[in-house]
Amino acid sequence: MALRALTGIKPTGEPHVGNWLGAIKPALALAASYETFYFIADYHALNAVYDAEALRKHTFSIAATYLAFGLDPERSVFYRQSEIPEVFELAWILACFTGKGLMNRAHSYKDSIAKNTEAGKDPDFNINMGLYTYPILMAADILMFSANVVPVGADQKQHVEFARDIAERINHNYKAELFTLPEPRIEEQVKTIVGLDGRKMSKSYDNTIPLFLDEKPLQKRINQIVTNSQEPAEPKDPDQSHIFSLHRLLLSDAEAQALRTKYQAGGMGWGQAKKEYFESLNALLKAPREEYRRLMADPAGLQSILAKGRDRARATASEFLHRIRTTIGIR
Ligand code: TRP
Image (cartoon, rainbow, N blue to C red):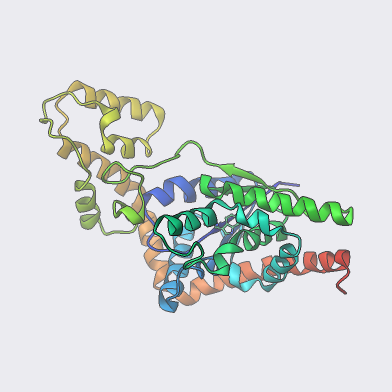
């Protein structure tokens, strides 16, 4: 039987080039060799998104994004977390086996505490229980579907390790191989993708290249990539150029080497470099852009894709939950 890979996508805001190359593309590539589960972690987003319209919109937009980049909903199981009630029941069960101290050690929670303390505020200021117990719900997402491999960003590695710890603890208690122990899988290749200003591409720095802009605004955005003041004729150091850093992510090794040589030879102005990057990027985004727009214009169609995924996911989840309940003596 094929190993299972599962990942959750938090619906928070407009997807950009960094999300695509750093997360979406590597996650979707796993469908070739794993049985894959992808879901929209809408209840995870709730600990920060308190605007109903925004949450709804982001959920549809991220679902359409994955489909536009080739997620095949027949081959993969694709669903919304909130539509699988079994996951939330499992989250409670896991909570009963999770040390409070384990949650205290979560990096994201500790960061929030540290920020509050630094600002002279109460350490728990603005920290809701959704944030605190976030790793337990995430463990339920993973363990419910017996995932072997969980592709995540480096910041989520600890959460997958928590899921493993909790699973081991329960397996040990009932002397049963109930839960599969998941492995995190971190995409090392594209660790940090730079934004327009050379810092990590991130919404919070306002330096992103959104994926689904029209051609003109996309070109405009690319023109905002920060460069030095070298003249067009001068040879350029590709390793010092944010344009090159971004462009090479779209190229094969041989193509990247050819572009490198072009920068070094001189005669390649920044305007030309941006134009070439725009052309490469636009060629790759053209078809997904159209597909994204088509999907976003048809919310009922999108919902029906997610409903099929929900039914498949629930079939697995309800059967497994039955086994879990039997094992723990609830039933
Ligand atoms: N916490 C993940 C993030 O912020 C999203 C997520 C929720 C997830 N549940 C998951 C990822 C289960 C992998 C597996 O990106």
